[in-house]
Image (cartoon, rainbow, N blue to C red):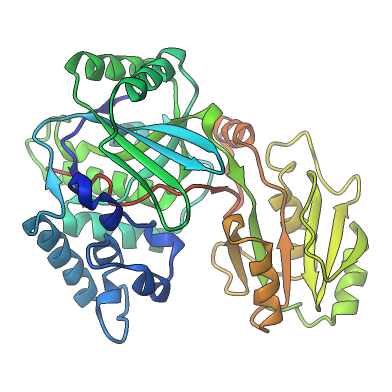
Length: 412
């Protein structure tokens, strides 16, 4: 793998907690407006919140506001550029567990040639939207989240560095997750890290498939527009935080559906019984406890659904996934939802919101039924990527999310 250090644009130490924000895609505009403090990066990555009422996020005035705010944050000193190319270490702590990622510039060609492997399909419209933001800012404002097979020497370098150096940033965000950030400015260590990654066989997109695709497409676009392209330009790289596989934890990614395809709740349950063993739980939330077991909330009650033997294929890296089982047996066979990436009848809810969120959305009348899924494993994700397979949409949810605004990568 080809990675490089870069001169990051980032907040002064005393402003890091104020500038850093949750990613653009985990908040809707109203949530972002409510959450954004004066210096928050949300004013740059979701600038529609600066209009009253909130503006269309795809309008030209919003894109112009994004550029205006990015420039303003730099003019005010809320974001400043390091004077040297460096790697950085980003540590996140959740529920007593800490994961340590290397912040680096990943290579566009590694993505284009498949060395950076993906496990999800992307939507072109979402890629195009993210491309606009990268293009107008000439920068990667938000990092992508990669995994790589553990390398003992790399793990030791990170462990030794954080044990002997004070962090640049050290704060707990309002959601209770801890964030620490170190800069690696030792030339010998920087060189060794670059060399170590030359022998890493692959990296895997854990979270941020659309941002990764958009960043790579902008890099390729700039290459095509430059008659003097050499391959060494900064636009050949994009911002990534790369974690060793062993440190990552995947949580559930659940589904809510707007209607029962013309069926009554009783009729829907009858059709489900063809493929599932069903146990009525009642009003208490039910969390799936193993593969091929699902929680379902319907008509004021929770149910345990267990797929019957013969309805799934555990020898198939895609067929074994519960998202596949649910799609085949319920969304296709009974509800006829069509392409889940474009269907307006389904929505996806990250497990971090809790199963109570599923119940809330059904009880409100917005949705008709909710399904809670057992989470996939990191090893399943890597096996699927290595075999060239693609997971169904919205299969994985990684937590904690990377905080945006701790460091930004300029493309020139």
